[in-house]
Length: 105
Image 1 (cartoon, rainbow, N blue to C red):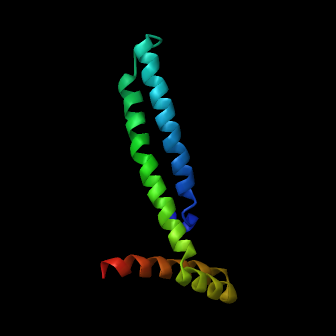
Image 2 (image 1 turned 30 degrees about the vertical axis):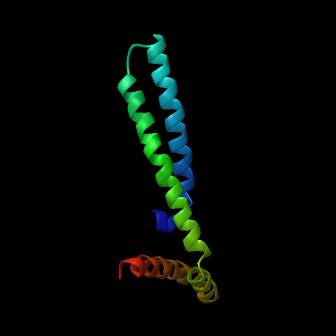
Image 3 (image 1 turned 90 degrees about the vertical axis):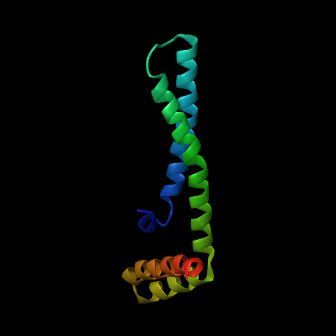
């Protein structure tokens, strides 16, 4: 999914994670004030998922920003545009694969 959206879904993930933190906190406060008696655990779970999701989304956004700003990506994207739209997607996959192989190999 991240390859198809070029990382733009990470922006959506960040928004959802922030919403989970805010709504989870509000839910816990409602239970503590006695406005509702149920679902404190659900609110706590949403809050924790949001706390985990925010930094992961930020790391993903930073990573995709580095990929898009890399010279290899720019060069491959330009070559793909010259060859047609299908080649753009293939060049994106090639650049991501090269970046992932770099630190590991």
